[in-house]
Length: 256
Image (cartoon, rainbow, N blue to C red):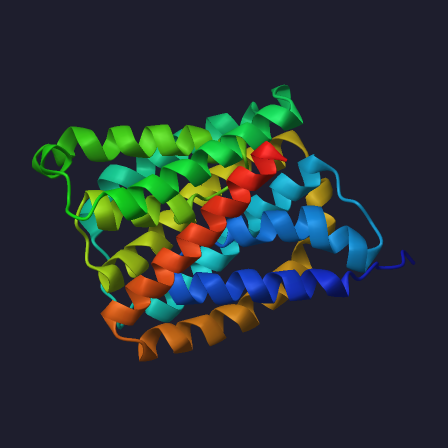
């Protein structure tokens, strides 16, 4: 009989990621990656290889988005037009980028993380109104934006909610609560590409996935309950603060 190894610290990581996913409709990989790289080795006594970290980030993004969509789909109606035009190209690009991510150095991966953080910060705080050029030509702008973000997020094993949610709100003009539900569906589609790419290249991260999903289920329920209670104005302020903190930590990792 083979002994089963349990990783209880991974449940805590899942709770934190699931909470953010339930609150904002994003995968939460932006939270999971620094926790796995910085906190998990201190508390769990084990340093995880970067391949396992990015694999777990992909798995977490997929399952968190699934939970978020299940909890939000009734109250917050997704925009299926945006999902079709944006999410499918993003998922395809994410999948192929994930397959080839191992060919790049850890420093390059960290650079992409920092670039995504800077982009997210600029989109959130510099664009106060939707961009007319993008909104008036969505047949082209939505798929193109999805492809670009899919490549960048696939390289770092992310579904990309921390960047595409601000993009949909600030650049394309979606309302916050509809954007949250739409983001959750995009997260499922986009993260599935990253997850399939990781499974196709290496599967060591699957040993930790069960505990991660248990935490995601609990955290997702708590985050969604809070999201439903907050009005749109407070929810958007919370999202702006979240994006700021995530962007700063991503760029700090690149610099230091």
